[in-house]
Length: 555
Image 1 (spheres, one colour):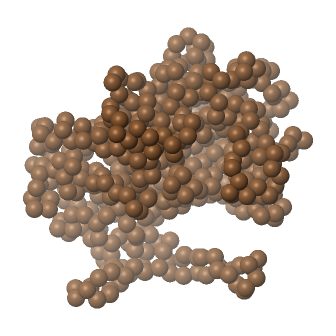
Image 2 (image 1 turned 180 degrees about the horizontal axis):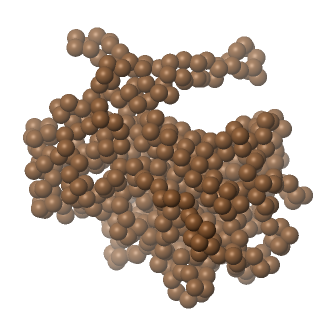
Image 3 (image 1 turned 90 degrees about the vertical axis):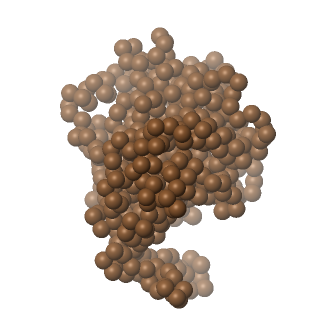
């Protein structure tokens, strides 16, 4: 959901969105299919194409509700599903020598108000004091499903496709990132652990780098808390949904089921208290967990859940389908990053994720420095991230709200016979089971220009090469480098279609789901912001809806 993590700004919709409510329709949790068969793999991964870069956006796993609701039904506010709280550890300074650190292991318990306002330890439905979850915290099941996602990705990209090595001695070819929300960080950690468990890492495997941003700079989710113009737009589309749905038979059906549990017996509405999104947050969180934390059976009515899903998808994601500005401010920064890593993977200039990892300063001089040629990116994010990306590409038509542990894989391929661009066939990625050997090319333009002591307060230089350049601004030589590269999107193992890739010349012959990189970049360029923060502070009083429909997924 929209996550306004700026704690100084909330509107009526933001209180739940900071904690990521959900609308997964009939299932709160994603149920994965069986691994691809050999026949399916042969169709999905044609022999004439070679996989070069995979970028995975993964929604965090199952969690507790973001806020206690419906306690009048008997639902307990504290859930005993977070056993990680029994074995937390923190980094502590061992001495006044800052280079010497230790770990403090501890057990967490939550304190709350007692009947007389005195402090008491929070307990679960069975009187449990340990393993009690914070609101919106990744639960044991959430850890289990994100671990399993990493294992499934390993089976595909290591065991079946031989794209990544079976054993790694470092994480130099892997880009890891998460939003500032703890459950997203913990989910990407679990997925990485599933993809490369200790048995798949050498004994001297160094500490991997996980990238995060401050809330004010975060674009890994639609950041209406730190983008004033986007907050204005999102409220306008929410209000439109309110006006469209509050007086309908569908909403009356929901009220008939839920009104007796609503505060003051008020009817259900898009903007009720709790909002429709808050109601569904509790429904899905309870549905994903054990019998001790369940709502009355009326809340799990299939027709009601389908109605809420339909309304929620329209309220939150219709803007991406209709408005170029909505796409730009909501998810354009992230999509621009994704395309930049694709072009950087072709040019091998650091824009494939190496610069973000930090080059040879990534571990403060502890012997790394091999980061180059990123092949795999794993980013821990949220349901609104996934739906926004797909909707901005015109590829979220008829889809349900992303369940827990959903993921999108942006796969970039090159033709095996291709000699275009800066790579030759001898530069092909190493085969499975081998480790990448560094070549003699400079690690990145960052180090070449500024050396290894670049400080945070120095201005970031304009990236060389294609990176954030729009398709129209590329030189003929740069545009030629994009030829024979293709992009394909898998969402929860389903192949997605970008409408702008259907015309002749925009896709791989015989398969419109393999978009040419040139066409894909041209589509994303249309809503990649040149200066996101400036755009967020601009046009605040302008009309919220475009004068004419601006369909997503086209150049």
